[in-house]
Length: 114
Length: 113
Image 1: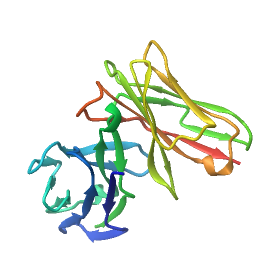
Image 2 (image 1 turned 60 degrees about the vertical axis):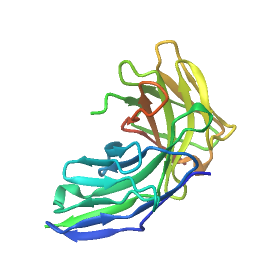
Image 3 (image 1 turned 90 degrees about the vertical axis):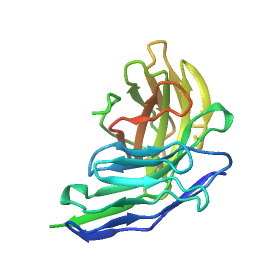
Image 4 (image 1 turned 135 degrees about the vertical axis):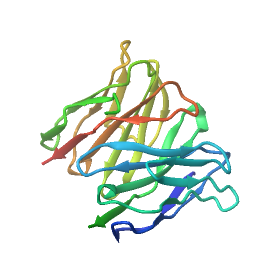
């Protein structure tokens, strides 16, 4: 079945450092791709999404580009802040059977130190 | 705030018991999804309802069941609880079932002792 693999954490960075969290996927068809973020003690929030190949999703300084040729959707941010400390989940939409369920990676915990 | 509400926020119960988790979707959303987040399994899709009908099933145990009511709120029933059912249970909603974004509630943290 469909699956998502994202880099193991935890990731620890200093403020203003460059962030990359790798995400690759295996899917039949053409799924939409998502990054969700979970701040400590909270639920999941949609960070960004891309619905077709070469689309770039962006939000709050974060970006990710849907690369069909490498089946990847890496998350990047040029300059992280302490407030970006959270767990980041890469996900794809599995539309088999007329549903739209999400398949998640295992999550990457990011800690940003001042 | 996503607009999706879940109650209760925390639940502590004993093995063998039954609990009901409640979810109210965003206004206008017809589709409700349930997910389980545990340390060993990660985030897993359990079940989806669309406008009162079951649409898809994932890794949902037979001891678990769900329904969506005419007012579109949904309940997830967990019975004969085991220690391994301890997890965070999320509800999400979307307008329909297509390329729509799912919006997640804050979750219900279940602890089975």
